[in-house]
Amino acid sequence: MQEKAAAIRKSFQRPKFWVMGFGWCLAACAGAANVVAYKSWNLYASHVTGSTSNIAFRLEGYQQGEYGSETLKEACSLVFSFLVGAYACGILIDKNQVHLLGKAFYGLALVLNSALLVSAAFVPGRLLPACLVAAACGLQNAMCTSHFGAIVRTTHVTGTMTDIGSTMGRISMIYLRRACRCSQLTDIERAEIGVDARKLAVLAGLWTFYLVGGLIGIYVENIVAGPKALLVPAFVTGSVGVTYMACRQLLKDYIKKVEKERFSADLKEAQSALAHMGSRLQDLETGDTDLVADLDKEMGHMIDALHEVEADFDNLYQQPGNATESAQSNRQ
Image (cartoon, rainbow, N blue to C red; front, side, top):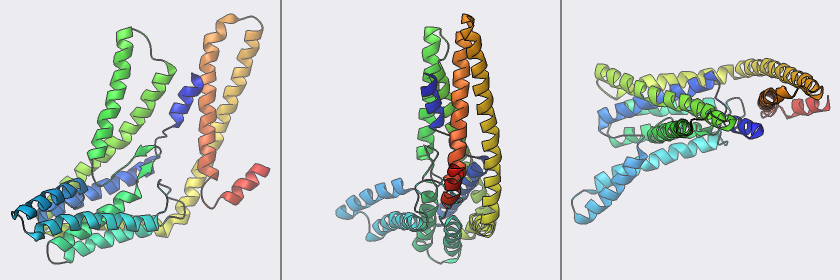
């Protein structure tokens, strides 16, 4: 049971705060861009589901002669533009999981995202600038497809709210089941609740920042009265992209240093847990049978500590470009 609980905890690790901040920042930018697009051109740029449904409506209306070909063209163009943006991200970032310090061109992707938004702010017309914003949303959304076992979308929140609701339902069901049985939570149930709680923190932050970004976009658009409000999210994404490209090596060295310190601390904790476990086993061998329950808890703590060491080792030595260092460490 302890090993299964430890495996459940390992299935999802809460992203580091700077990684969550990166995702929340992108969600706020997408929320702002989406509301500005709607207020400026009456078109939602990131709602591929709605645009796809519009294609069905427009096809039916076109057949009945109720809609012109222009409305069908709008719906198809928005879906295709989002697809093109995601395609461009697949070329720049060839991994389906966030790895900010690897060889993927995150900085270039962010700068391209900013360029698309800036172009949309100044390009005349209605459909073309909306398609540029849709392409930017597709590019950004594909950057954060998944991270640490949780699906992360930064340009729309339908899936986010679905995950929040289902996660809260699972937590509630565990507590309700135990309340009906008048029994305490098992180690596995505590591990499941801990994992779901960490997921909720990430998902709730995404939804909140998307909403905040939308509010900022609305007020900025009211002030400048036009699509030039897109310059705000463009400035944010562009600044982050340029900073990432300029300071990538410094950031990589800093993160590596932090990972080494964390690895050393977790290794000492695992060694301490093993030593304490050994001493308790010696007490048990002398005939103290009351220590069985304590030993079970100590075993769980030791397994958790070892899994933390394993995760730290993966983060530290399994990054692209560190293969040589990993091999040298293994030989030592």
